[in-house]
Length: 163
Image 1 (spheres, helix red, strand yellow):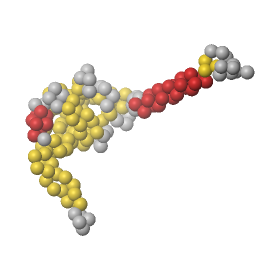
Image 2 (cartoon, helix red, strand yellow):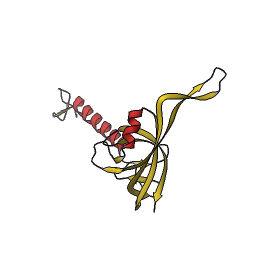
Image 3 (tube, helix red, strand yellow):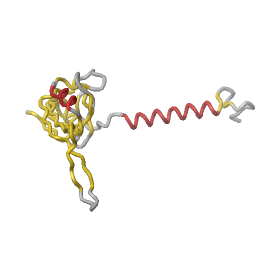
Image 4 (cartoon, helix red, strand yellow):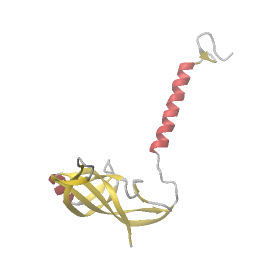
């Protein structure tokens, strides 16, 4: 028999200990599957990219910080992910629905929408572009923006390869 009178397998490990170890292994495997790199195709070449992030509904001080430009890094400021080269702003709007069901866009006073152009170096694979920290440049993706002056996030609007 595998269990002794104290409920231990082979007299050494209890069933509860085995269940806890199994649970830890399952959770670790789930975390690796969820947050592991999604880059599965081989790298074809090193490239220079220009991408544009749309950052919505920010205040004037964020616009001013973005206009200072400078390097963009990963969250821990260990890898340079590009350089802000241009910031274009426009007044922010808020989508609302009228009583008769029509969608309108009302101005949002004292808020701005910014289009931030960033030049970066990364890799091109068969089906996507990847920055040095494994951030995939896919249109529609939300990307965190970290610089010396600002921390925000925006939607990736476009990516182009520079020659």
